[in-house]
Image (cartoon, rainbow, N blue to C red):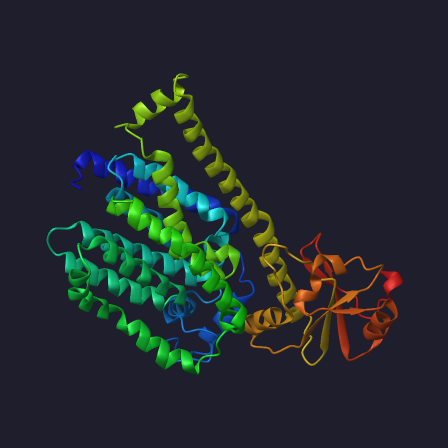
Length: 471
């Protein structure tokens, strides 16, 4: 699709607006301290592990981990550059999605609305936006979006289509080095090409080009056999759920072949269905990062298939015309959901993530400043963050080690005062529930140092030798 100078100017301004929007979403959290697994990754950066050679983790994802290591070398424990990287890559991902939409949709304005729908999925994949520890999905989307862009070019181009496919395959390999669920794009491409070719012989004749995906198989066989494979990702129950999902989706895939003739619609439908398999293997929130690409294209195609405006002025004029109530409802729904979801995401950043990161940093510094080396540290009633799960004992221990090169043993305890805390899920932090009498014994032991988590100041208070009734 040829783009004139006026259109380039419009696209450039839109790209700037995407970047500004992404900054505003996390502006309140841009200096948020490291949480949970982020401390684990930084420890490996601190200890100079080579992510491309080290296979002791539960996965082999060297590209995101290398980027974290490079940032640690350059910026240390300053969290701002880490969050800026998320902002920049998320903005680039949205822009690549815009370019994909331009390849899919004929109307030149539809891609702008498609990006708004895509960015509305931030609410489901909020960890990708806010959490440095999910660089995996961040770069997965970056490389897969690039791959999809070249793949679409490959089946639309009359010339250089093989080159475009090979470029697409290279990006799939890079995506796989970011997160293993990238492998699901391969059956999407193969099934589409099978549907798209005139006959099976022609399909088989061109099958040599799928050798571009062979590095993925080699990497998996060589490195993953030495890794600590995540149990929940490969147990019998998970495999059975995936098998059921495949069986349920097969009639839908067959229906695509029978009912659809438009290559773009076929590809969108296959991508939407097959990418959702990744939800079986990963957390619900971060798991939506990959499926959001296909889902956004599918929703855009359904809602905006009759979109025929040539300028934003026509869109505004049409939206204000009371005669077009159905179209008006679509516009209002898209923008209302976008702003509501964006505000909710801003709330996650401002309240949950900010408070959790501030608490982690303040607790670390308080323990370091109290010179508690050699003592058993007990922290009473650590707050539970529903969305961020901020604070396993080991994460706080790693945070202290990152800041001060000091190894300290941390113990979370919950005082079983009329079972007030059992319902809040604190137990997931490995916290031990103790009675009031047991707490009093702990705090009076001279080898222990005891703190009380105080959410009013987002810090801990030293309550060593302070009995429960004297708080």
